[in-house]
Picture 1 (cartoon, rainbow, N blue to C red):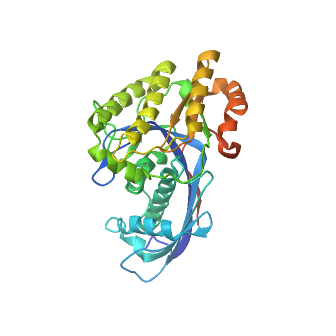
Picture 2 (cartoon, one colour):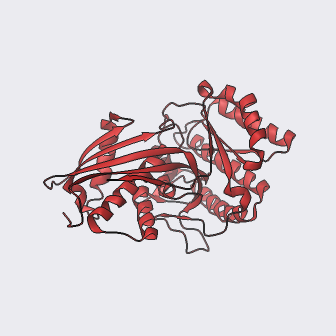
Picture 3 (cartoon, rainbow, N blue to C red):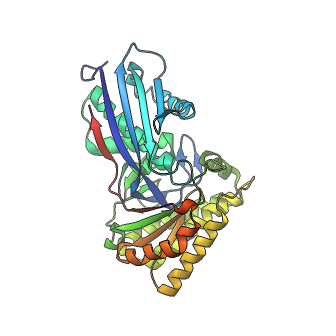
Length: 353
């Protein structure tokens, strides 16, 4: 145990979910992406994770208890235990402690709102704070870059949740700023219209997905459209960087709707193929497009790997869009559930003691 470390303590981080505008679908090696992805971090949809540590005699493996929403979860305990044990070469002090991880979401788990992104981001940040306790302070840029790399090893999209605003994960043609190993904030300036963007998340279903993201990614290995998809995502990422800088709302809408439908088209055309969207999902999409056309309001949608719909729109149209959601879309949600979210500023350190 390092002379800087404590015998026991507790670290708490809160980390946001993110919604990918350009989708990550397909991976290789150790959680490396086959194409770049670009996301917007959310403000209200968060995971809160506490890491309690108590010094003990060193063991060979991580000594872990995992609580999810206040209850012991053997399923998550096994997954997180494997994750932490795979980190021991670089983080050997993890076996110096009995660890209790207590994690909770304020949104439905495993229903396509990137719960693994916020969860592994929060956990990675807790690990980095423990590293500082054991080894000393770390430069802030290096802290978050390493946290992003750590989060990626648990869930690829989690690499993007260690930052607020708009983030890219994956190498981008013509740029040396972005990496497959960790996510980075967009280097370019964000147009004011996208700095305060809203995301209304319509909960069509809170049930667990029939096919998990890991299984979906693996089906891309032999997908007949894989090569074309990866190039499409690259082209869309490059174009979206420009769109977010110039404020080109028409092209923004075209790209993200194409990305959302492409993602689900890839699922449907996999072997075996599967469908995660529901009839309510399609009805919501049709109503959004009709509202946009008739009211001339730049409202749009995207989907994650599930049936729920993210309704994206500028802050200046908030009143009109909320009325539209309440009048026409809530009826299609599960028990009328929806989350009135927006662009967030990133994770928060809640406590170190």
